Image 1 (cartoon, rainbow, N blue to C red):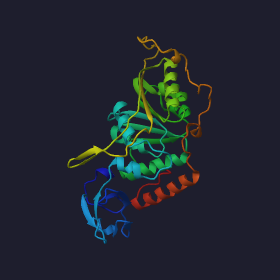
Image 2: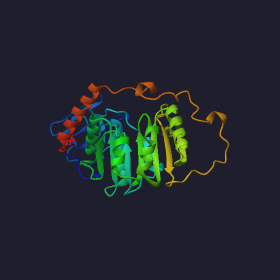
Image 3: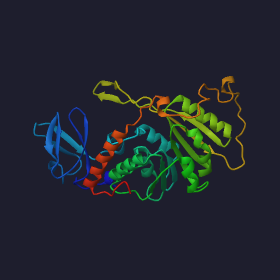
Image 4: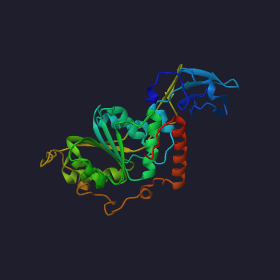
Length: 331
């Protein structure tokens, strides 16, 4: 894998540069490449053949630390069409959905491939990840990003284009250890997810808004096939530590999305009766959005992805893949 390599920097590799103020710059090395920034500039040849952890001095005298990017850094800097799942949420999904080595994982909504790379790293070459994406252009971008990160097409990954409800039944019944959903209306896919999961398997849902979270959990309760349902969000705040100056940083990664995990009951079983009395407002679905039949990104306040941007990102990734000697992600 490219990010696990221990040899010297070579042409086509991604390198992360850190300037004296901690700003990060990710570049792809080329023989005639040249790095330019407001802090300094130098040719790529100053890094090619050098070991990781090299400090290179720019022509202006500024020093830059050169390291291979970590997965969290790569995900935040890679070209993307669809909005990514942030590293803090990817880490939660891998842990709380118990993505183990050799697991068979079914993913719906590949986007730009950020979560897919975390899942592939967790299951390893002996596992199986099948990602279902509705848009061909997003699937192409995701494969190109993953190829650039691993340095080759991961043998455990299969990307299929189509709707989850239509594709999932063709992939086998009750044979997937984990299912991960990242979509606008996950409650519509709960029956297909249940049919795909082994009994006792884990479903993990990533959604952006409270209304989506509420409707998904209410749908789980109504189906009476899901148990151990948990919902939460995670915030990330870094700290400034320098001498006696120890304080929280002024900025933080706050709300990005909600996560829901649930496990499947065996066929014909019903959930145990709850010992707590539900609140009156919890009867039924109890939300003003119940009458909404179709959910779109604009209804949830999400930004739409312009086709022009997707085409630009695809061209950029094709150029990077060609420079790195990788196979065509369209294939």
